[in-house]
Every structure is written in C-alpha cells, then in structure tokens.
Image 1 (cartoon, helix red, strand yellow):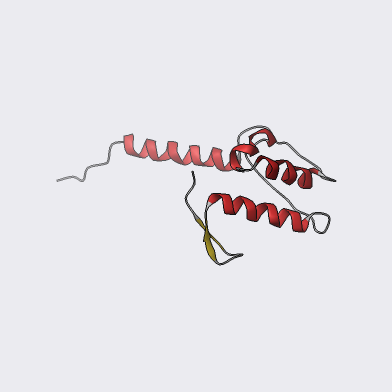
Image 2 (tube, rainbow, N blue to C red; image 1 turned 60 degrees about the vertical axis):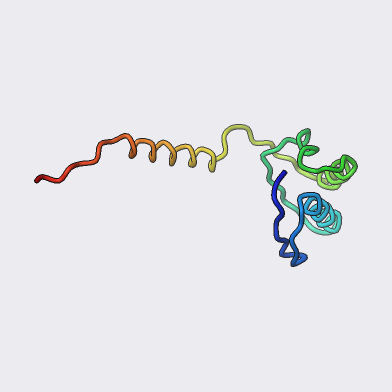
Length: 103
C-alpha cells in the first residue's frame, strides 16, 4: 500500500483511500463543466486495484468516458525507454576499466 501523501488542495496528509476519494471528487466536480485529460499506465480493468471502492471506480470511469475521446497508445513509454538507456550507460561505465595514471 502506498504511503501517505501531502495534498496541496487540502493542506493535509492523506492516506491512499482519501487520495482516491479526492480524485473522484475532483472528476465529479469537473464533469460536464471542464475538459479533463488523464494519462495512465493502467487499463480500465486495472483501475479497481488503484481505487479501493468498486462503486467509486465505476462512477469515476462513467464520468471520464462520457463524451470522451479515448486514445490507447501501445508500446513502451519514452520515460521507460530513457530510464533503461541510462541504466545501460551506468552499467557500461562500471564495467569499463578506469585508466591508471603513469607513475
């Protein structure tokens, strides 16, 4: 279970369940009022793992997908690709022998 996080909206420390409720409240207030862009690495089927209340998940998805345009992007993310490249570069640096200074 993730550790508590500080909410800039409430000015308080919130546990994971409270954060999920806060996101639901935010989406509910914006529903039919403002545009909302959501990016995630989870499919809709996996959202129940993130949100503890099943009714909350159904209502949240209902509000998000109503009049929505959903774009599913397949493949590795750029951040994941860049992190892997940095790890490989660090690994190469550790394996390469360090030049010795002439004595």
